[in-house]
Image (cartoon, rainbow, N blue to C red; front, side, top):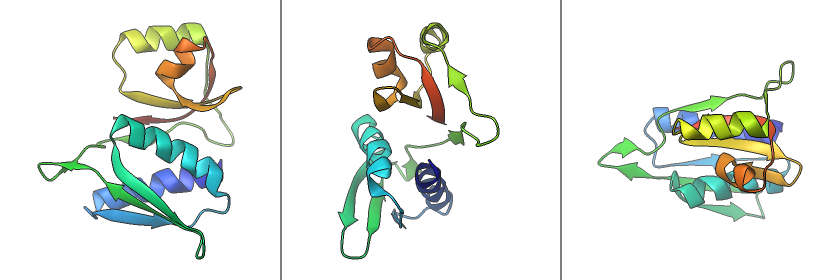
Amino acid sequence: MNDIFNTLITIKNSLIAKQPYCSIRPKYAPSCFRVLRILYEEGYILDYSYNKEYNIIYVNHNYYKNIPTVNIIKLYNKATFPVYIKYSDLATIHKFGVDLIILSTSKGIMPHYKALKYRLGGKAICYIR
């Protein structure tokens, strides 16, 4: 989980600094790839690539008229106080038009709308707007 948080924090900091891309050195890359794949599929990042020799992930940010497509990244899951969302609560949250919540479920890491499709709840990782 720490690699996922470090990935999201690095992306958030580079967006604040208005950088066109960022580089991340994860200890365990597959967990980061799951989150980056979701961000790519949702259009929040342009693309990402992995340099296996140096163990670096490069993330290219997506901008629209010089404004980043990601405005807010709020990390929910703290080690001392994890946030769990039940399926029924997730259905209520989805009705209010939430942009994207990334969850860790029993079927893996997925966006909230896929968790609704599979009727799953899970541990909230982050909220992205």
